Length: 248
Length: 182
Figure (tube, chains in turn orange, brown):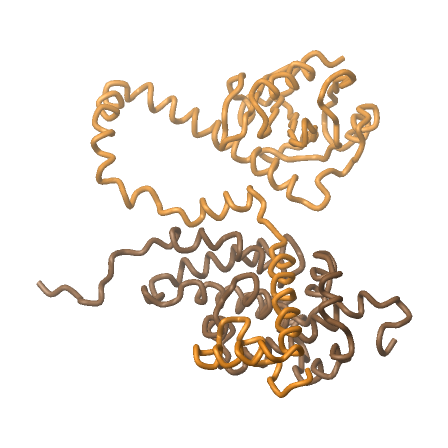
């Protein structure tokens, strides 16, 4: 810089940190000093460049959801007005207490299994190495499970469909080993879990349902319990289920 | 019945914190240089801020408060300790000189990726102060609160940080063999 205005002061001016009299004096000075004017121009360009370059990273939607759930005010803090809605519901509950107890028990059991599977799905996708056998070829993935799980299963031929097989890994549900396969559909990952149907933890009603905003389909076939879980539509989930059910 | 006078209407943590979520993540990602670590850092920050929210004084600067929590959490983490070890501001002041180069030309030519790379290569103390000033558009006073340093230090550190960034961009634009001191 050719004149005696320090760069630090010029930066503070550009950052809007000089008081009004100092800013006015510097502004007047720059009208007659080419060197300071050029430095100021470069300073502005630099500020813009850093501002643009610095806005670089965006949080993943899943992470945002996790944090939001974590900090959202607990619902019981606002229960006062909810009694208005709860009164009709309460009458129904009183009338059907027996049925409700059974349904609640079943629903809690189902929710527990679905929560576990959802956790497995999310944790696997978040992992740096989501699958232990990476292959789009079912004839590579299926034999990989040999000796690792106490059963065998058939995988569908995906030719002519939108689904792609990504790979697989061993997963555990209620201490029982099973197969966890990852499929992809239009950049969405879908988990397929296959466990032995022991009629206890895995003995759940068949059909499509919704667990924590994921769509889940489940059925029993040849003594095996299948779960198809992902954030795609229930139609897509059912389409993959159909392929698995027809696999030979 | 006596009502405490200083009691302000309840401020919701979520309403104050969630609008800052994206920026806090961006800042955390720049500090840690790693997605998983950045997520852990933001999660830790939100957990600490939520726990300590009762001690936050309504009417004071929430943004500086939560950024300070994030930064302190980072500094006490393993990568934070590694990033700050043996940093001497004066040492970095002597690296090269950008005065001899037509800077306007340099920065006009510089693209976003180059500035990003130069930012990523800066010592953490310079990277964070530039991000707080240019991306978060914090005032010197807010930066001073966030970094827990006097406002005068903010001004001199920003000066050094900008100089180091210019040198970084400049050395990237020179052919490999020309990089000073190499």
